[in-house]
Image (cartoon, rainbow, N blue to C red; front, side):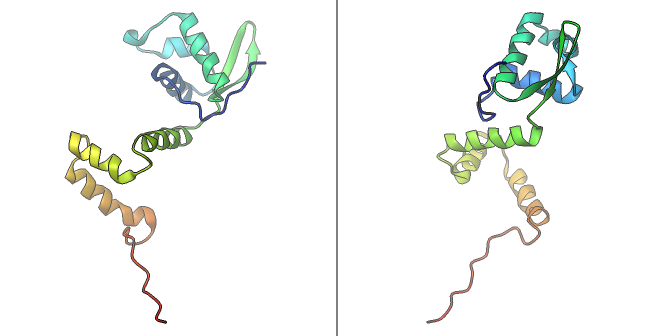
Length: 141
């Protein structure tokens, strides 16, 4: 059995693309993954096989059964868990500061002030309150 690496090991773009297909397909074989790729993404069967085995080593997919010579795999890592990991890695690039990350997104035009306002307006629904941090009143001596 292949050695398992922690699920937190970063995925390459190609591995992430194969994992996306696994999420869409559910339990699937290497052939089914290959067939589900668009024409411009088509690669050799052995390339997909290698990527699936790397994903298995990283704990992102797992073998569920064998039918004939075909191994069937399923995602072991869900989309929300994967996205949280990617966001954590991204934040690390900015010293763990969400402010620096958002500032950079604003500077590059990736995030607009309109987007920021929409996020701010959506925050109360997500946080169950005002969405703003309020300072606790100081207790007197």
